[in-house]
Length: 189
Image (cartoon, rainbow, N blue to C red; front, side, top):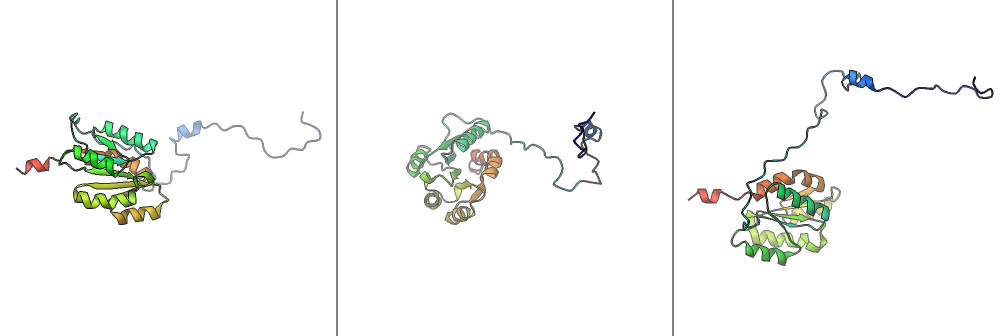
């Protein structure tokens, strides 16, 4: 039946039927006691509840120096989902004009893409810090491999510097925290 000049080499195996995994509940027979912490099933991150919808004429509390279209759309979509008005600005002059239109209310959060060369974040952050004082948080995000830039951003006054992935993951919580209208000032009367 076989070919006459060909010797048998190796062992032929049929494709494996993986139905045994279903019988073992995905265990593969390797369950030797309790699982190590951190190696269990992962659960989806639940976004916080959105804030109440703001008035149409409400002042923006969050400004962003972001030109990267991926992050711009991500911040925009998350802001809409969380009912937080985020305004995107390109330079210091534009930010100053928008803040003047807010009246006395200072921004609660300013987001910087630390790789946005047009915004000049390392020169603008110290100016904003001295002008806005403690009432405004400045958060920057960058690639996780940019350790030197992270250090420089902290040195010039950036309150928090996050890798892009952590920024994306924590964006709903950040916007919710900083987009909420401060009620404490009215409660003290």
